[in-house]
Length: 366
Image (cartoon, rainbow, N blue to C red; front, side, top):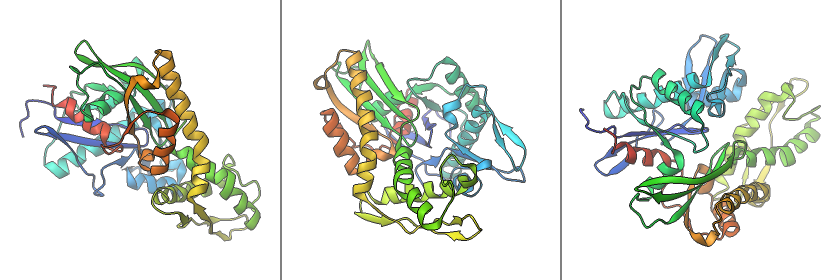
């Protein structure tokens, strides 16, 4: 298909990534091979040297964490290499990001029958020049000859209909992902949408909920009931066990958005003497809310600091738009709404809003 504009937008995320296409005036998410809207930003290499991306790599990371990695976006532009022990191969962050981009490009080929060589790719507002250059390199390695970059909060705002020719209202983009948090104030200035101030924490996100539950509640109980010596997250002996626990708790956390209590399941690992340890733990929503409270408060403090630096009161913000999977939970929205005192808008899927906004912008790029 011959296109006059780029039309394809990619959210290259820390935890998950997504691709969307602009059909007329409507951005549509292109599902992956597992019929999901988002693809985990995880890359694995097995002992034969075969590369796995997305869900397959996530499964590998649970059973073989030395040969699958995620959150490499945090290292973009850094002189850092990831080692895959079984194959002996190493990869730079931009090379791993390129594998994710190839996977998304393949989704387009499979679903639409198009081979695309151009896409708008989003980056955090905090990305510096060397990090943006690394993102462009990743796109080139993935086969893209043209890859305009767009700041993630601007993409989210576009998906919500924020116009460059607007009434100069301020919006706050609250982006709480799996492993990172970003807050950005946006405004229409001189015919463009601009990020006028931003802040965040590259080590604050939904995974902190999981680790708080594991560290404070689940691990101490398992250690006592099964006599697990030095059963701590930083003990390499228990690395696989904690990886499996993390995956199970993450699944339970999602179910707690709709249920009052769930059981930790699908998690088995070997104890001190080779015996099977299978957690039998009931996790309640109240326990999750208690664990999440301090983390959500930290994100609210960052938001208020970002406003204060621009001498803006919360009343000056027209709305807060929510980005990131954790914000789907009603308890999360209740807490952050009360802490900020600003109207929340979550009418666009927070998991795919950035990709959709990138596609909107791609429709303006020849």
